[in-house]
Length: 339
Image (cartoon, rainbow, N blue to C red; front, side):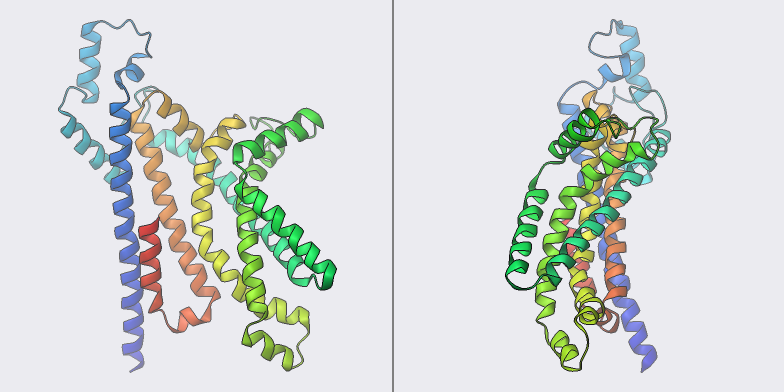
């Protein structure tokens, strides 16, 4: 009987993973399709190959470039070729840089992952701090504190990262001169403003979610029972309500990391920082189809992987999901389609 239950749980988990992977394949296909046709219909990629709009290349040079990059083939054949490259993660050579796309991605992905990961950790630290301050604030003063925190969280969550970064540069780089405005060659100091810029909007949203979840968990039966047994408020908060209140935030962490990866496009351009976002923006400007395709597909795959890790973290934190994983496939499939 026990073996049958274990086998049933393993099957349900496998189905959940299969659904997520199927959704990942759908996301990659849609992403590759949109990128290909948007870039091809917006202009001629030969401009990137031949050096820009002012190129003086003759007909023979144009013909050689078209043959070398397969641009003399029918559009449908070019599309299928790009799909195959996306599926095999072999994106060919960059039109503009004349380098393998995989080399460009390998060089630019780590800096983006670094600032995105640091920003997520900082966002969680800020969100937990704000939510805990709100949870321990009692009485009339407590209501004022919670109201002020809610206002700050709302403003932070809706403020564009470009505006946040511009204000931080104005204050800490141009005004006080304590931090560099650009990230090149400044070591850890060059990470501060980009990471904070990415983290603030996410922190505002996470804090709002955690504060509401803590308020609900504080009135739940398990918290009331713990108090009735003589548990101190600090123990109730840290051992009971916080763990339950963190579940919605953990579930949102996958989405948050995906948002940070997309926000890196703006932040890396703003702070003149090398990374996948800046590479994507520059390549899209010159219609470098292979690089844009590779960058977008990698971001999509990272998003799906982070969502899987988020699901796993939620299972580890919530014992109800470990005992009854039947709800996991439905939730995972729904979130995967939504992503």
